[in-house]
Image 1: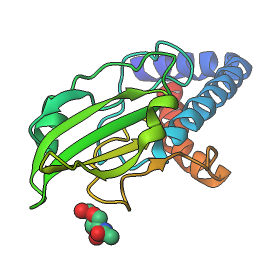
Image 2: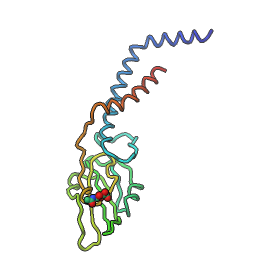
Image 3: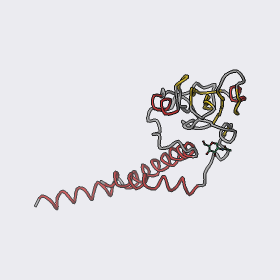
Image 4: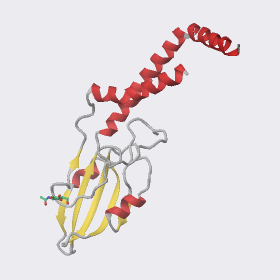
Length: 186
Ligand SMILES: *[C@@H]1O[C@H](CO)[C@@H](O)[C@H](O)[C@H]1NC(C)=O
């Protein structure tokens, strides 16, 4: 005789809180829409499944770059790159790559950069030294995964499409909305 009593209580409280529940759901959906919209901006860049940071962003439009100083090759740069936010005066990720005539990397340097520092993108053969230097810049969260090796990839790559279509934003929100509904209906 206990279970009909419990289900009656449950139905009653659920019915009373219906308008409140609708308000909570609407607010939650709005928030999720905004959050997922911001995540879409970062998704424009292919960063090879590097996890998005879970720590809170220190300021609006903050981002991260792979960061290393004069490391022997790209693998060792990315593998041990420091994971920290770029300072507010920077907008891009810079990569400097030195390699021999045989294409063997001798030095990889990656950092956050200002527009000014990105002026020197391109490849230059150093006359005395026996290496070529290629410099590239890119815009976006952890965008400097690869190293420049020739004039086609030693470029300044900026993100033109800041907004993606509403359909992909909605697609990202739907599973989250479903999750919220499941949680609130428990
Ligand atoms: C430039 O380098 C990339 C990556 O190493 C390569 O796929 C591409 O074919 C190269 N392009 C030219 C023009 O050499």
